[in-house]
Length: 256
Image (cartoon, rainbow, N blue to C red):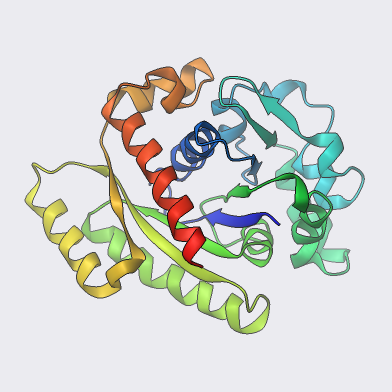
């Protein structure tokens, strides 16, 4: 049975897609069977995994509306060695079209149940907003991974996200929990980063992952080549950190 995790944060530009793509590739390097679900109409995770979002015959959009299934729509990321349920701009229209559908917040959960036994991990890249798409991700998941930068505004957004997760847990998905907070784009030279990092550890304890992802140019360059950072330059500090994060995830899941 696959462990399903959302990578979510209502704040944009915090490294959700970078984390999803590189965690998928890092887990694949650890011989885990991984499916990445791109739930963002921008399709950045699709492109970052090396798949052309302009030439899709089926995508997350069709799966959410029930006109296709995951097994038909998924594609293989050759550079990352994991499967991808790809997305493009069409997915933005699903928000409106799903209003009339039954169980609209559980469409993704039902679709993933059909391929559950084929994967060890399913990672869902959520859009940077609390939308019907994000709600589908949260309803389908066993847990949430929250990537965040160690800066002041990130703390404010975090409290909103935690409240949202509590509401979904109470009303729609009793299995949902916060798996952990991942500190990303971390610059140890900045005093504020150190202070916010310490505050997170003090407040959330072992919910904060030990692995810290540093600010890294090679990770930022990788998407333009359609290759995950851990494959693009495996020796870079960013790639090494995401591989370590994958190993930490596997250990943490065994304890669940």
